[in-house]
Amino acid sequence: MERVGRATWTVAPRGWRRESWETNESNLLNSMNPQAALQKQIEKYRAMTGQERFKLALGLHELSCAIAREGIRRQHPEASPDEVERLLRERIGLAQRL
Image 1 (cartoon, rainbow, N blue to C red):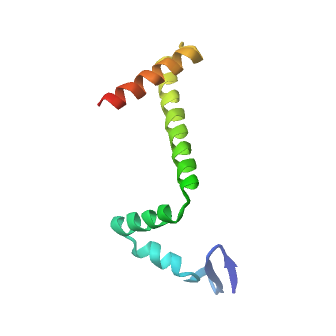
Image 2: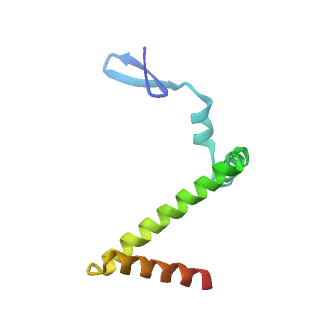
Image 3: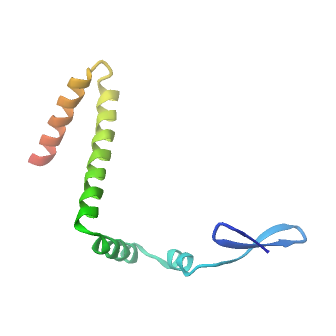
């Protein structure tokens, strides 16, 4: 028997085959529905410190800004970096007014 990842594998006459999962985590993932996943995520957030949640929020904000900048660059390939930032600020302002 050989362990590969989280599954246990055995050599069968026709090659490798997966025998079983070794952790309860995979059973949890297989049985998870959207509501259970949301509850699990909320538990994870509650276990974080305020600083960890703040860092996560800033990271998500930066990610969304990077995605928006890329969209702006595709829509306006001639735009300078300053123009891209101006258009990004306009988009953020529009989103806040909606």
